[in-house]
Amino acid sequence: MANSLLPVVALLALLFGASRAADFEVGGDAGWVVPSAGDSGTYNDWASKNRFLVGDSVHFKYKADSVMEVTQEEYDKCGSTHPIFFSNNGDTEVRLDRPGPFYFISGVTGHCERGQKMVVKVIGQNEPPPAPPAPPSGAAPAGIGSAAAMVTAALLPALIVLGV
Image 1: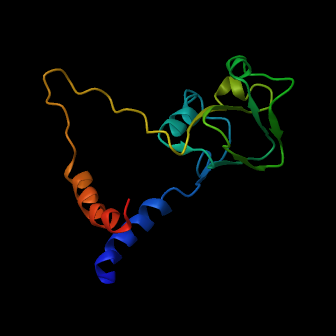
Image 2 (image 1 turned 120 degrees about the vertical axis):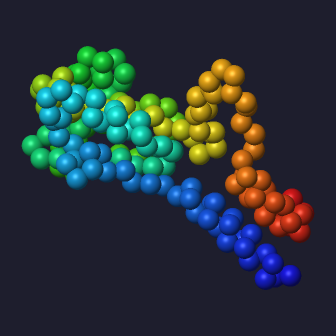
């Protein structure tokens, strides 16, 4: 009986292990730099392709620059005299400690206006991911996929044994 629970326990460990905090390197190998001309959406494009959860961190690497966390209004106007957070040490990690948007800009004059700014949208650990786009009209609604059915089928015996 114990051997039959091994796959279920391994699956549960995988599922719960996947919820560990992640550290995201802003800008990848290039780091936190002024984007090249005509590429002002670089950081927001990057952020939109990642899923940030409460507890994750964003890591900024830069030279002769800075990073500031600011309000949305300050983000929109590319400036702040009293940022929420400021660092210019060249190696800054910011922990995403709450759900909602985080607004980051460079503190060097002119850099934000040239695209060195980013909004990170953080979801809570227990919040569902954003809903997928609606299917085109006339398309059949999506049902439970075979992978979800297999996970449910695999977990059901363990849940019954555990009395859940």
